[in-house]
Image 1: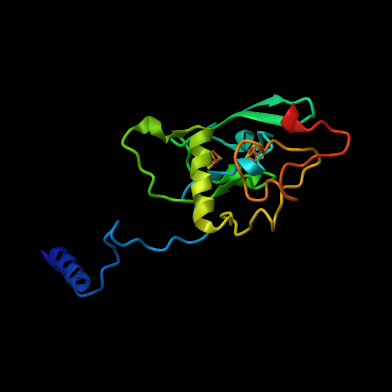
Image 2: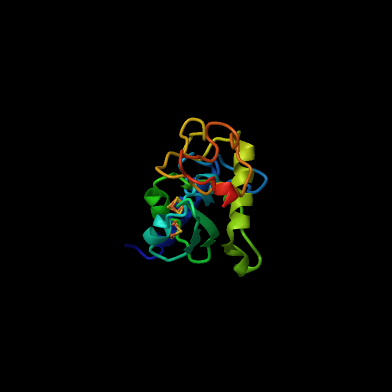
Length: 186
Ligand code: SF4
Ligand code: SF4
């Protein structure tokens, strides 16, 4: 190649792009629409969680902590549920492993923090995030279903007493089986 041709070709390429529409956007003034299935975040829905810990076992990074205590009626009380987003790689394995769609990919992506440790979310932070999401989506989960469309079905009553959820007093609220103790009393 003749001397200087590389520079000429590079400049021509640059000139081509000068006259093309920009492919970047002025974030945050303008924000692109996010695809529905994008793994923007992890949302944990306490009202669907049984405390089975399957998500924690599926996580290759070990960033999910689930701590439970048995109730007298056989259910598990979730005493701790925490996700360390400092080491989460958003692979989605936890969401695929959860049998009850209690943890799902979705939610906001503009959650950058100034303090690194703030990326560790305890159950209160996770619940606040999930409830804010549901408030904005009209009660529809990221997977496109609502509690009414896909109610939690388990063979035993589940631990869902901590946060007010849509339908908590109705057919999709805490389940009580005949012969079992009312978990809210134990
Ligand atoms: S998305 Fe992947 S790394 Fe993050 S908590 Fe779930 S399984 Fe772990
Ligand atoms: S989020 Fe799902 S897999 Fe994890 S403890 Fe709750 S029900 Fe089990």
